[in-house]
Length: 242
Ligand SMILES: [Zn+2]
Image (cartoon, rainbow, N blue to C red; front, top):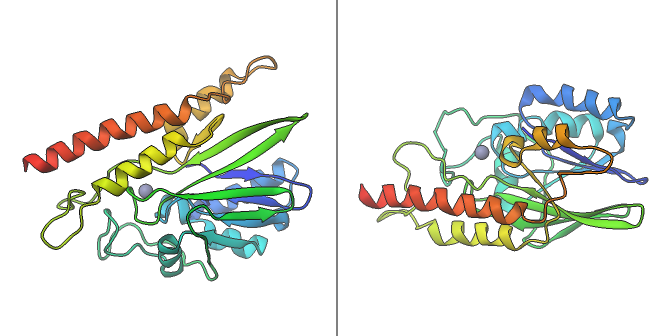
């Protein structure tokens, strides 16, 4: 599970908190990098499942940071549980996680600032109703790159859920496709997915040298989106056949 720290002289932004038991590890890693958890001023969430939001409550207590999420993700974060609108909803299922006390809501296209850092929320519903992809610019030695933290675009669900909808449930396919198109269209020099394996983070890290930075890959968002479209189309085909 990804948890990203974006740093500045006037405070840091942390993206996601992974599992509940990940919080102490994330706090230790921030210290190991030479930063202070108390200087994390903003924590944002990709989607409110236990493997990305589980550690946020503890990370908020340790840092005193503002936690921000889309309105629908904020509702789940406050409850510590996804609602029946979630494709993976189970009344007493695996998605319970520590409730986040204070959550600020951010709208689609909303920009949140910490010092010179500005991070933009792109609502990408599909995997969850409140799913959010985040983007920002990072600059080093006068060169600025657009970075995207891409939410899950996987059509995963409990048995019986239909992304195509039913007599009583809406068709989620159009908004899901629009989310995928939105990620494909983002300015994207560097993409990190909420599951590192979806953007080969460890491989890129291992291949990085002083002269070559494989993280810089302007096609990454488009490839991630193309893959998601393919998987969604397969899923919808199976649903339609049932
Ligand atoms: Zn998830």
